[in-house]
Length: 237
Ligand SMILES: [Zn+2]
Image 1 (spheres, rainbow, N blue to C red):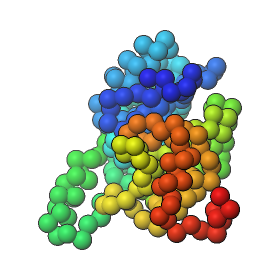
Image 2 (image 1 turned 180 degrees about the horizontal axis):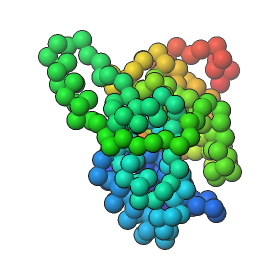
Image 3 (image 1 turned 60 degrees about the horizontal axis):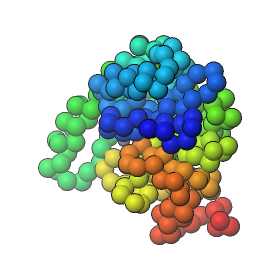
């Protein structure tokens, strides 16, 4: 489904992959759960492109619902893969990028099992991304370090469209945006800081890793941060 003329969301593969269209080819952000490659390939073909048009795959993070079909898609398309150094290391081994947290002794074995089941086919990341880097996608796509959900989580911001791809650092739940929280969050303080950092981008549209696209993104982000202790750097907003 199109969000803007050159930005698509691909439904039905758990976490949301996004397809960005440039004159020199396609970029995919995230790859869905394991077994999603054929669905994504079908979408690309139906949209009128060939597999060779997929130049790049960008990863927000290495969780199985975002990197699950990376190995298969890379093999099928030959796309170059980009992620942070930390998440690249997790993808290389196919393991969870952090442990699931709980103080509940009954939940510990359940989480340990989930981590084992959440392994993915390992894949090689070709290029490591870091905060502030700009890629030649849609007139400039900015890499935003949003560690917190995982140690190397990245978001991507396209100022020309005012669109933020927030991965799991900001989630779209019903009619709200929420920050990463609970057992899947590697570091809660850093996760909260990542939300505040993204508020400053003043995004018009928020495309989260889960849930619906939010078109009044800034207003919802302001609402989300109401309850947060706002750091001095962002008080002028
Ligand atoms: Zn996710």
